[in-house]
Length: 82
Image 1: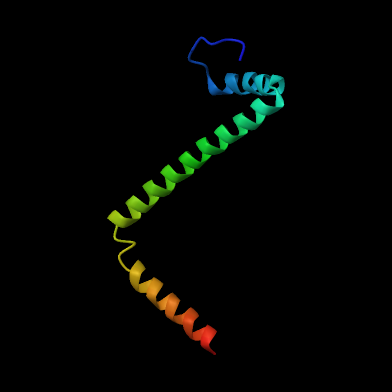
Image 2: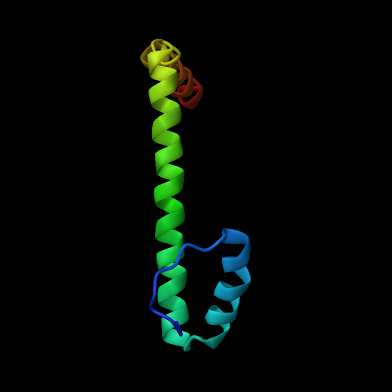
């Protein structure tokens, strides 16, 4: 990047600047940036899933999950046996 100073920037202003910087990257750095972006997305999705499961668990929504899984496995097993 052309500037290493860290300044608070409005995300709407940062997006076009970031696009311009991406266009200047060498191929190998572009691949690295893509990998970093995918890791960031994975972290965000994982956090949302964890939060959602924690909320569902606290609300008692997952209490029957073991029973439901046993029934589903039994149903799959019986359909394969036929």
